[in-house]
Length: 207
Image (tube, rainbow, N blue to C red; front, top):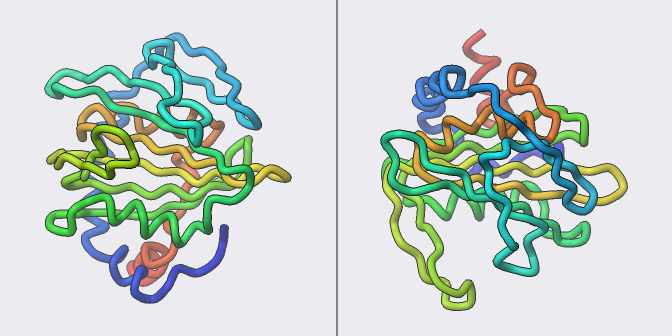
């Protein structure tokens, strides 16, 4: 979890990090108190709003998935998918690179954060831009561009079990409205997060 990212990846992550700060501000306004329920997903428990519709996983690789209703201004809903590969699934660096590749390079903004939760330490990749949204059967590898999208991808290290991967994707406003709630669902405090990799170096330089 704490390995350094490759130099090339660090350079990519250093691009336009500050532009995401403005996108985070609406989260505080959008986060509202709502009824929540605990949902057990193998080795982890997520406490999620009752408005998040729990669905049957679309793949055997998914430990669970939820549909988040679109907020005002967005037409499409968002999706939270939880993956567990039995303690495998690749390292943090490989998964971060793969997620970055799911967004088109033009206009892509990103940052990586690290934090602690009640269920283990985690890394969080925050991406915005045009998302190549998968459509149809996974085997076909078909995608459709979704402009103005946001992804919050979490690698949660559960002691003695391995990594769980939480991936929230959808329209910018809808994902932003649930950014804090996502963190709270597995016991994380966004106020205690710290920059990771290239972002950490930039943060130290600015001080």
